[in-house]
Length: 231
Image 1 (cartoon, rainbow, N blue to C red):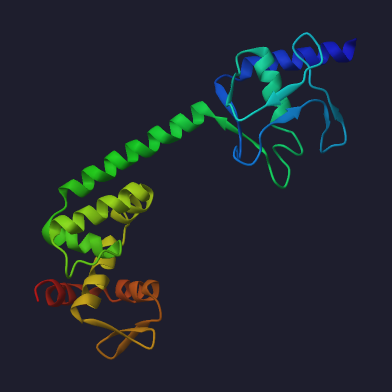
Image 2: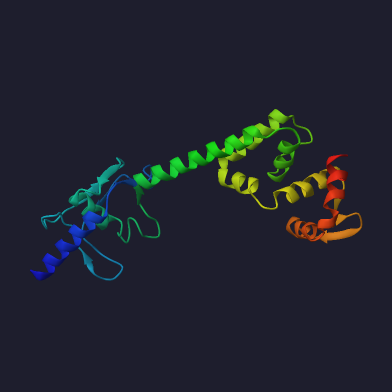
């Protein structure tokens, strides 16, 4: 009886500490019609009984329909705690069920959309030389495209990976990266056999090495900027 009382106390504590909604779904509903969850032996070799808050034995059949569990409800919480550790259906080599934290998913989605909006605002302000310089960093061809087409490409990249665009926009070496890309396009920097050159001076065998070379030759920056951007 003491053991049962301790388990009930632990469950009550867990109930107080958890809130939100999770969804249990078929990972591949086209492949699997249904599975039934009951007692199982855990990875620790201990029997995990599936019971409700009154200690009554439970069996749950999961189909293609999504099951939503409110973690503030004790029975739903017990079901969630039981299913999430299932050694075959959830944690097996080919999981059949997946558990989605609805609140966390919503927070991640909102954060992603907020970041997209922030990045799009930055892109909106770009134009002319600044637009082309930043576009080169993202791998956009600026030589044969108009400003509108270039900006559209950047918006597309931002929609796919706003983190990457924001990281490049705020990168401490952004201006030097822009200088390297523009200089390569304009001909001040060349590549031969995989090596970057400034005139006959080797800069390195990769973009990152060329960037380091450029940072170490700060005295050349004014001349390079005039030669590249005023050409």
